[in-house]
Amino acid sequence: MITDLRLLLGPRILNRYLAWTAGYGVLSGIAAALLVPVVEDLASGERDAIGRHLPALAIVTLAACVVRYVQTMRGSAAALKTMSSLHQRLGDHLVSLPLGWFDSDRTGRLTRVATDGTVMITGIFAHLLSPLVISVAAPTTVTIALFFYDWRLGLATAVSIPVLALAFRFAAWTLARGEARNHAADVEAGTRVIEFGRNQRVLRAFGRGVHGYQPLEDAISEQQRIRRRTLGHGVVGLSVSGLAVQLAVTVLMLVCVWLALDGAVTPAAAVALTALAFRFAGPLADVSEYAGAIRIAGNDLRRLTDVLRTPGMPEPSASAPLTRPGQIDLDRVSFGYSPETPVLRSFSLTVPPGSVTALVGPSGSGKTTVIRLISRFWDVQEGVVRVGGVDVRDLRTEDLTRQLALVSQDVYLFDDTLAANIRLGRPEATDAELAEAARLAGVDEIVARLPHGWQTRVGEGGVSVSGGERQRVAIARALLKQAPIVLLDEVTAALDPENELYLRRSIRQLAQYSTVVLVAHRLNNVVDADQIVVVDSGRVVETGTHESLIAADGAYARLWHAKSHGQGWRLGGR
Image 1 (cartoon, rainbow, N blue to C red):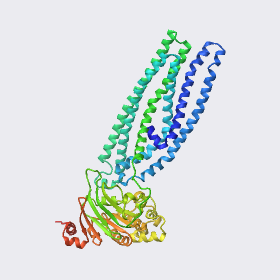
Image 2: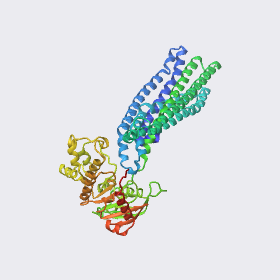
Image 3: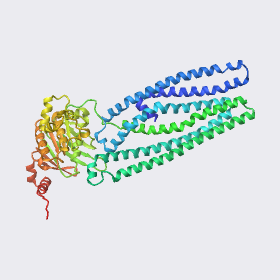
Image 4: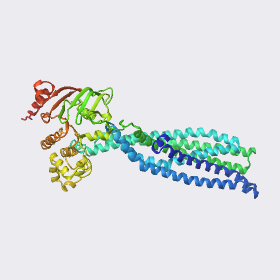
């Protein structure tokens, strides 16, 4: 955990904070140890003896107050630094990660870390780390001091330390293990709740909208079972640690009594040493609680630092100059989302600048993967992907994205106005350019129907507009960006004829100044493409125009004829 904290704060800030905290713990232990000679002085009845150790106690107490103040201020500063910079650092690092890293599982866990986790981590400095360090430093100082009073009492104290450490470790382990299970169960239950809410249309259509959604019920039941189990284990762990502390105190008291009866220490000293034994055991009684909480917070901290330690996409200090703007090349590319299962095998393709290239083929053949590799969601395992004549690995992310406009089948709109969502493509665009892009994509027709026109907010994810209308907005973004290369990933898959008409018009407009790569299942949308590439099993099996591929009577012709026969289907009845 200390290593993780150093990653967040830097070693200098953390080391100074720990030093001041440990210093306060040592001074408080010395102050407690000085009570023994002070009590002996008071018990002697000699007025002159009272002043022998009392000034030292006063000086140590004052020093402890000063150190405590500095330590508290440094802890507050560390907590504020963590609170103010954590989300910023997390966001800065996330933008450097490959886009393929953001799958649904990681996104769900990231949401938990960025909310509950950051609150827990901030509380480490305010409520957990300082008491834990003090609860260790003060008893350690007391143990050393006891050796000076009587080696037997010091030895009894020293022997109890490893026993207590094992008990505390067991308690912290039970709490941390339970928290890890709780975290996994909470993530699963939260994911199922979101799934339940987002898919109400499907669930209600099949009578599962109100109750009876088994995955959610199973997740909640498992969450409750794990929490009960965690509570039971936590009670056992805390009970063991508490019993160990009580046994240690009892042993030390018996040793003090034995020393007093043996005449090794005076009765007054025995009373003071018994109080010192409680000063040794008292903080240790809190160690298991603090240690358990620290382990729980440490789990959140580890999850956060695991994200921060995830290597980002390697980037050059400066991008190589483009030699063939608008051109795309995939040269003998092999890639798989898991190395043992390749998706593309020695895949080669050249997309000339200013052309329209369509990728067609059966589902799972690798078409979408081609789009993702061009966008550098991942790096290839073999071969080279070039954009503008340059290996995408030799381009900085901002320079690569400046060359591309990507429109996917699943379009996300931000909870903002239509104008703001389209301006995402090029924020500095003029109102006239915005209006023209909207007209070409058919968004102006949507605006005319909305209650507040351009100022209508579309809701989170664009819930106030249909799927086809969201596609129009995404196309308008691409039109407004005017990127040299436009990638359209199955944007026609779920469009009605009206939205499909707008899409075709937009593609013709995009082709006037951009290279267009279109992944499509509807072959009637690719007949006018300059180049049609048939992909199957991760390889290019055919390339040509619509007419030449039909004449070749190969894979594309079979797809075309199957589509033509499908259009002739009709439902029959009696």
